[in-house]
Amino acid sequence: MTGYDVLAEVYEWLISDAKLTPAEFAAAFADVTCLLPSNAQVLDCSCGTGQLAVGLAGLGMQVVATDASAAMVRRTERLAEETGASFLTVRADWEELTDHFGDASFDMVFCVGNSLHHAEGARGRVAALESMSRLLRRGGRLVLTSRNWELVRSRGSRLDISDRMVRRNGRDGLVIYRWEIAPQWEQEHRIEIAVVQVEGDGSVLVRSELLSCWPYQYGELESELHSVGLRVEKSTFDPEAEGYVVVATKE
Image 1 (cartoon, one colour):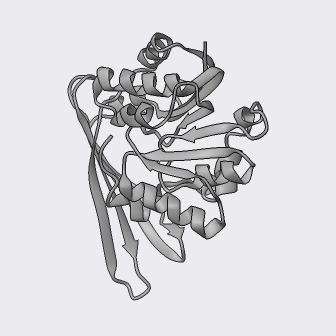
Image 2: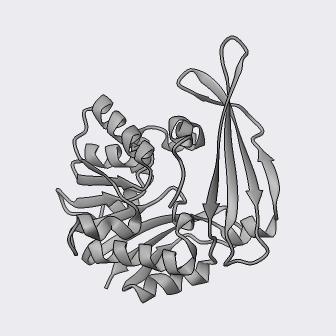
Image 3: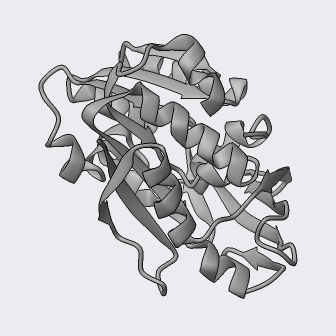
């Protein structure tokens, strides 16, 4: 997984209003967190700016937060300090997770924020899923969110400009996505994300980052999960929906 060193400082403009606070972010996954034992050991392995990790810690869970981006880990640590949350943070990509944690260490692993497509191709994706699977106890669950890449690719290369300003921390910003869709599924695709902040004096500050990604079809993901010992327990995949959640159980 690469990037997010620039976007880390403005990532809250990319988070939906419904998941903006730690409590709201954790509540979005209440249907699976309710299955956890008290004092559950939970890993957020794409922690971003920390809303989910802090929210889970607020529910009494024993949380570990990791991310491949050092800047994102620093944002998570900052939010934890601001909210009084206490948990371990580690900068690590998915394939490095087993260097830091033993097999069967966690009751639940979260890989959310549409992050898995940053794994490099099918081989990188399976390696990432294998690491997550190894860290789960038998009967533990992986919770993963994904874009619907079938829909994304069907729309081709394009520029998507938000139709409204987003207000965060008393500042307005406009979010822009530029998609570079490769001819073949297995080829590297690119997304450039820009957050255009409008300051109170009318000046404009632009932060943008070009990110690499390797999309996958839903059927591929199901097969890859099965190959690493995870059985899909629940899926919200809909061919017409923009994204979906998969919950897979360690067999």
